Amino acid sequence: MSASTLLHSLFKYKAWANEELFFELEKLDPATHQAELHTAIRLLNHIYVVDRIFAAHLSGIAHSYTATNTPETPTFDELRHAVTESDRWYVAYIENLAPDLLSESVPIRFTDGANGLMSREEMLAHVATHGGYHRGAIGRIMAQVPVPPPPDVFTVYLHRSEPERRAGYL
Image (cartoon, rainbow, N blue to C red; front, side, top):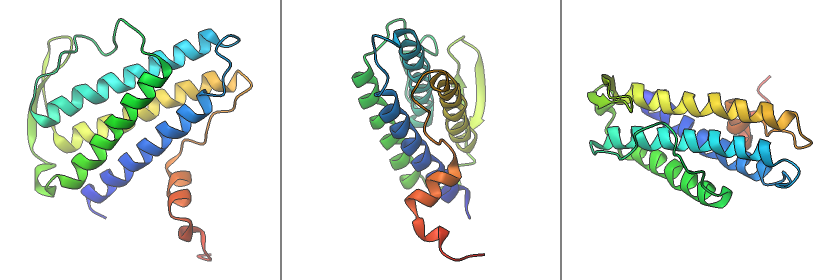
């Protein structure tokens, strides 16, 4: 499997995991679980902002973020829409990226002003793993309220998106 193929699969998984998480979070009663929902939205917004920062780096354009989260908290629906669009952007980006460009190093500037250098492949790996880390934190929050977190693992995604992978291999 090539790096491009793996990254494409990982970002389709990321989009699936985000969609599943938003679906389950929607079941939280906003009055009863206001604090938990607010924390989840702030974490999801942080993931989104970092995703957009790295999308700008990958595109070679400037971004307007000065931190890895925004001062204001978006609504649940606004954020869900923005995350869905961002996930679509990443899947399309990888689909259209020439494989030889994955190893290309790109100069970047972090929100703290520090400069860095990362390959496109490293940036994409960071975005994929960063989101999973914070979805796990949201899952822990959900485990403390009556809405269980969705199964956020790559193997579940693979077998749900390609059920033929479960057919008689052992």
